[in-house]
Length: 355
Image 1 (spheres, rainbow, N blue to C red):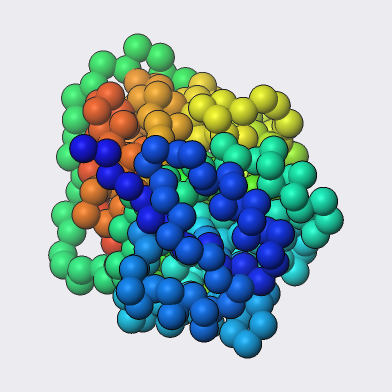
Image 2 (tube, rainbow, N blue to C red):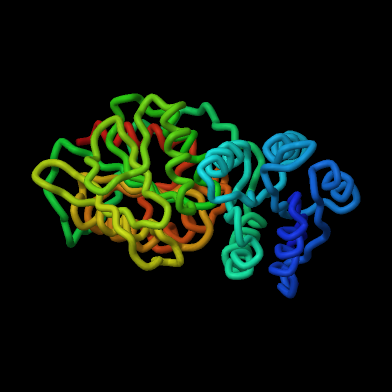
């Protein structure tokens, strides 16, 4: 039997509420159970019929969206899709909302909202369906002892990309739920951690704000990647929204190439694009980690990394907000180890020390 996703729209714009309702209407698996112009009206509607997903504006009268989001996540965690403007301020606020528990972003411009929204139906539907499958309860890492060594899986690597160097590259790919997962991981790394490259599925203009937030709370440096940036210890480079990130090598050092291009697996940046480049130029000098996310982007690329000699890992179902991308990688045999989110920082430091 088809599971119906009950959606509540919360936005102070009557135009946006109307258009969102029209965009979601007619879908066999989605039912809009109501629309509200502010959080107080939303609460009244939710008392009798709690939604599976809430689409939430941030700037609203009487109570802003982030305050409302935090109240929801405290009392009854519910998947929330943030409907955010494409402004710099909107991007920064949206990242704060993602940190507070929102699981997806749907962008809207300040002008021409109706026309833009009508051409972005597939993006909205994907965000709502992705959110509906998310586990939004607060994750509390277990303070358990983890193994000191990772298992040595015997794999016949037919394509050794390069011999060992003193440089280690950690490549991380993620999507829905990845913002909070990355925050947890990077906050637990020491300042001398191995160089990290990251693809987080996120719209253009949001990755810079996301990187800036992480940079302000982590011991390592975090920045939105620019073409030609060197991958070096103590630095995490996040692929900019709307552009692919690939790894290149010159001499003993690794660099990133940032280029526009068509979407791969419906995404730009694509995790597969990054992983495949790492397999090609870094091989056994790299570690690939695939985290929470909807779909299959990164699964084949992680397999290519494993076949090239990289150590590979996937996040387990228990700690993943959406067990889509890790599940597909595991099914392909791409992951040498399946681990909880709390074990990822240990793995990164372990791989650094293995070189």
